[in-house]
Image 1 (tube, each protein chain N blue to C red):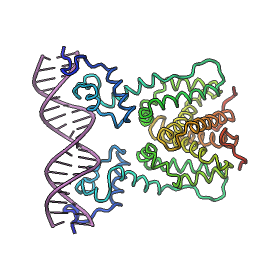
Image 2: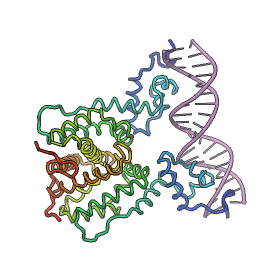
Image 3: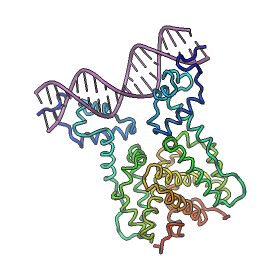
Image 4: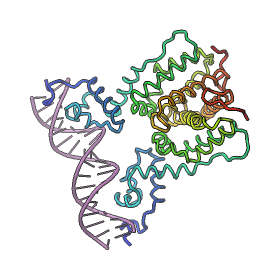
Amino acid sequence: MAVSARRGTPLSIDEICAAALRLVDEGGVEGLSMRKLAAELDVNPMSLYHHVASKDALLELICATAASRMSLPPDDGTPWQEQLRALALAYHRHARLHPALWIHVHNHPRIIADRRLSLWQVLERVLRLAGVPEEELRRTSDVLHAFVSGIILAELQGHLPDDPEETGRRLATAVELIVRGLEGGAAGARPAARG
Amino acid sequence: MAVSARRGTPLSIDEICAAALRLVDEGGVEGLSMRKLAAELDVNPMSLYHHVASKDALLELICATAASRMSLPPDDGTPWQEQLRALALAYHRHARLHPALWIHVHNHPRIIADRRLSLWQVLERVLRLAGVPEEELRRTSDVLHAFVSGIILAELQGHLPDDPEETGRRLATAVELIVRGLEGGAAGARPAARG
DNA sequence: ACCTGAACACCGTTCAAGT
DNA sequence: ACCTGAACACCGTTCAAGT
């Protein structure tokens, strides 16, 4: 058993991910370096490469694990307007939990574009509930996600005052805008019925 | 006169900015390094530091010059709905012109948050036209900007199919959603009148 | 005033060698 | 199987020295 001279315990992927996520949460994606991470784990920088193909691969890995931890609203029969608000708030909460990582995800297509993510599944379910026709689901969900992401991104990056009350109002404004737009029937996204 | 042995002409800020912008447009912000830029200009890397304080300062500089070149809709009395569409399209066009730089700007608060930017001036003018009360101007413009930015960002980063026709429809959907939301009076942004 | 080379403190990653 | 040190090819930036 060729275990680290310095540690006595072998490295594990989970241990690496946890430490990497901590570094990113604390110092942003730029604050994560393979060398710093190795130092944090009391290990030679090159040892990491036996568990992870590259820094990018490691980042994708911690993005996926963080994303899987996001709690989304259940399919419990509440009105779609309410579920839409709950979804936006859940997304917002997740973003506040891991701001730097969230920003990174939204700047790297591959990760967020995966339609199998439960985020997209839930969003499309709610939009069906709102009466959005099947052939408009993709575009409408893209637009709505972009909207809410835009708001959250702007807030995370301090493009606007960070007063929590103001934040709540702003997100409410955004969701109301969406809900009324859907109810009213925006061009290219005309729901057949409401509620 | 201590002029570069290799060049014969002294460096100028404009020359530096132009080359830097070109490098960013071609290879993204990560594709810009002081050393590559210097090579491009046939100059010693350290010469750059006589014209620019740091790489970050240089980036802010080219952001500002690019932003000042954006063409915004004039105050010509056309309906606010139309002006809002024109503004969104102008923003979109600018983003397509310098995608990497645009993304960078939207990931760096200081630059875009400056309310003196003509972008904000024009947006607030149009929103006043739409009947948004003075005390709601800030929040409403933040939300709308975040919305359109979110769409454009998602598109630039390939979160969605890049078919130009689809792109047009998507932006139209977004603007319609905003316009109808404003007309209908979303919570926290209730216009007093329309047209 | 403007430019330069050497140097410092960092990166991610490859590779051959150790146990 | 897992770990390691040396090395390569990069960074941004400081500093003292050149003209």
